[in-house]
Length: 299
Ligand code: NAD
Image (cartoon, rainbow, N blue to C red; front, side, top):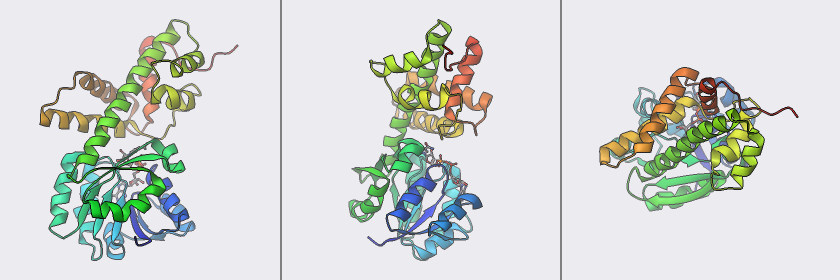
């Protein structure tokens, strides 16, 4: 594949993914509405574009890592949107935007002979930095083969299928499970602490036992017990993902009873703690009710 790539949206996830691509020898043309991450990547050798359209004027393949479906639509079809670029042939969405938006955008781009591909990722900021993300691609197989070398720089690549939206559906299933794990881990750990357990002992035992999950393995020891609440994924994004999953489930007639409870607790966390706060702050919502804090025990 060509070593020239466009990259739009260089936030918590986009920045480390873009950095890895630059370090692997790709020539990146980037755009973000924030100057700070753009400048950091320019210092590493990236070229800054003035709009999504300019990125798409200069690059055949454009990667995106954007927060929400509505921002994705503006970046794609707005007045300076990527769809108006003269060179772009392939639009690869690394964001979590759900199959409905993905299919709609793909249809509109097809009219301009631009191939749209789902390529959402999982594994957090740490995974983006280390290049160990799970990358879930759907779209035409020949385009997948073309972009695979670049995707392999950011993680383990899975071809989910050629049906539009499949990669996004895969990602929503994954994130619903991750959101449920985080919510129930907050409730169980707070309950244990209230009853007198040491949270560090809980982490060790549960990780050796059948309750193990990504929340108790990574998020609790890294960002809850030290009280930093800085894992790198916001409440707004988590609530968005859970909502998108429930909307899709309802649309296709799949039942998600536990999913409905998970949606409620993330809605509560989002409104009480704020959408810009880290997802580990769900612990503070549960702690407040119980009147305890999950923190290092002084011995
Ligand atoms: P983020 O908010 O840190 O990054 C998004 C970036 O998009 C920001 O730099 C922002 O300035 C930029 N942006 C916003 N509006 C824009 C516009 N109109 N034009 C250009 N740039 C614009 O979010 P993130 O955590 O990096 O997540 C990005 C996507 O990846 C989301 O869809 C999220 O659900 C998904 N995701 C995140 C994680 C994670 O752990 N953070 C993990 C997997 C998937």
